[in-house]
Length: 344
Length: 87
Image (cartoon, rainbow over all chains, first blue to last red; front, side, top):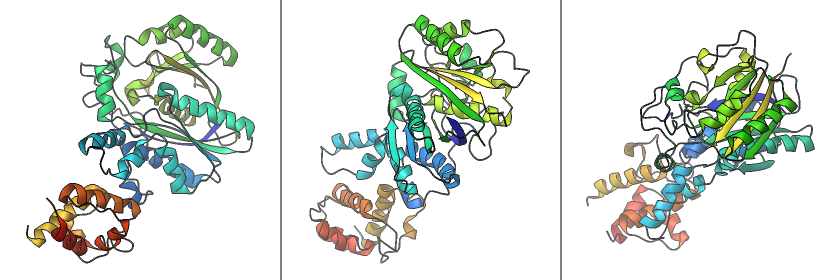
């Protein structure tokens, strides 16, 4: 599967004037998206959109406007519009199950993003949303790959979206998934404490089976559920043997000492000449970070440039042509992606 | 409440309930149609307005046909609120 166009709305400068060198620091350990003006979304529709829908549709529309045809929309979002969902549920209590406003309800379901993209662009093709927590985007990606196996000439919009809402932030914080001490950026990885920094964002891709014009091929994906780091490392070794070699390792490590053993166990098995990269200081942690990591990998291949802050190891001297991406959702859900640069 | 004050308050509620981010109360003309070519509201907004009347003024609208007349403009809404409000 090849990526042809991509866009990303994130806490950093990734939409419009893209600048990966400058890091925007988290505020109170939250990296919130830098939202554009959404000039291509009609105001009457925009005013009803919650943040997840806004950043999803906002990232998708420029790609759809450029795409010749689109046979479907495949989105991964663990939480969808959680802020609107909680507003709606609170109304049920506050107004004693009386008359409720429809907008919060309409915007609150995870599939509101794919549905709104389909409605806005009058796309009547395959329209689906995957919601498998930390593997939501990965399942969307697998779905796109399977659809392309069945429909060789098709083109799909693939995306991953998740927002920080006060509700899920507070719940995750109580669960110890966000750090108590202040994090300013790459110090995230040295903190030796529980939790990470919160993040949010949306990344969209136009994908098909044509290599011409693409900079990145998604060669393979694997997902597994386990809390055994040795099992993850063994599975990664097998994945690397089958799909490798790779000359860079893009790690989803997030500074949480509870999850770090999974990343460390895998990293210990890597060959010495692989460059080691990480990205959570750039995106923050949320269930769909793999989508943003994929967007970054595509950008690295396209520009043949990787800013130094992404390197955990010494920056590579040779251009990076293949990336092994590993991300873990809370040490329970794990995904590996084999990504290759397309040479022209 | 004075009619002009009620109009301003109602416009503020409409902006808040319908999330009309780009509008100020002064932008909503009293006799301008709320739907269609005027303010450009649609059917989902009409349900939001039904909820607004119930929550802010204690008015229940059970027949959607009544809404068409009541929600014609700010003037018609204010007339209805003055005649029917329970809070």
